[in-house]
Image 1 (cartoon, rainbow, N blue to C red):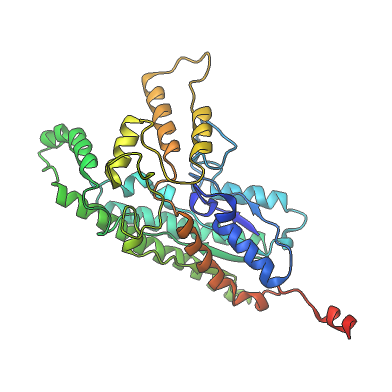
Image 2: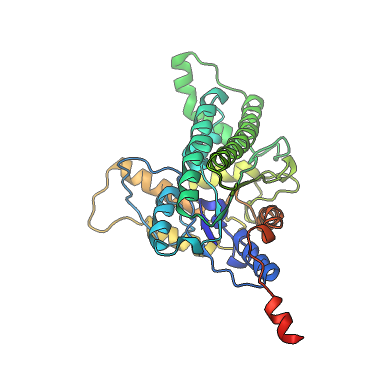
Amino acid sequence: MLVMGDSILWGQGLRKERKSWWRVKCWLEEKTGREVKEDIRAHSGALLETPPNTAIRFRSNDKEVNQPLPSVNQQLDEALQSYRDNRSSVSLILVDGCINDVGVSNLLNAAASLESLRPRIDAHCRGGMTELLRRIVAGFPNAQVLVTGYYRSISSQTDDNAFLRLLVNKLARDEEGAKESKVRVLTYKEMRQQLIAISEEWYQLSTANLANAAGKVNQELNENSLPSRVTFVEINFWPEHAFAAPDTLLWNFKLGSTNLSGFRRIIVAVSFGTAAFKTNDETRDERSKSCKETFKKPKGVKETKAEKEFREESYLTCRYASLGHPNQMGALVYAEAIKGHLQSLLDKAGWLRDTTAFAQVGQ
């Protein structure tokens, strides 16, 4: 089982035994009576596509540390090289990707317009994923490929008081520019509604595009008299499961670490970086250490102001990287969705252990 993609399939903030891919591995072993060897190449922050001339200042071997590279396409390159002599041994591939190419910051920017986001989502979640899937099915001729979708981060059920700090900071940054350009500054209500609209558009459009990519590659396989091997897995997170919603399935802040809630905590934490704000995920302490080591000031190197700001911002982003990712229950929902599609493949893919010989011996 080969797992490629970004922080969602990696399982940001989760212990191994609670990650969706680990649950799927254990379930497959139970159902098939065969050992499943996992190869996990997904990591936090991974881009789907590899940008040209991308320079990476900071590197880490900890997959919890969000880094754009290796991209999912590069993960595939490395996997093709690793299995170059036995690519048919890969039976199952779990893959996701495209949210980091669209840009999480764009999806959390109330000033962004839906019109500006739609082409980006189309380009990466449909175009980019289609190209990746073509490469996957060509490179691994025996593999069933499951593409997992994304979810709404913010909904109408996200804590209504959670945007105050975001608004204060955003308005403070944009007020002067808005005055100069004579663009009216959005009110709190307008910004909240825009963020909800962006999140809903992201969920609907990314879901449609990823499903389209899977369908397109299956159609191309069929046109070449080959069976369909790509399945899109939609994730049923509803508005009540969004960030800071009543029944959230996403990591938040640790209770008791502050009396603030929702996005107020996010913005305060990222803006001021105080140790008083802690996430409630399972790998917080280990990730924090890795982030500190990765983004520490290089010895003997004189930083420019811009370089220092980038490094410090990267450290804080890394430290709070679990926020908005599936928690234990969220990862379970992912695993169940994947298992639901795999159930029908057990016989079709020939994964069940043949027990005929054992039965004959016992007769």
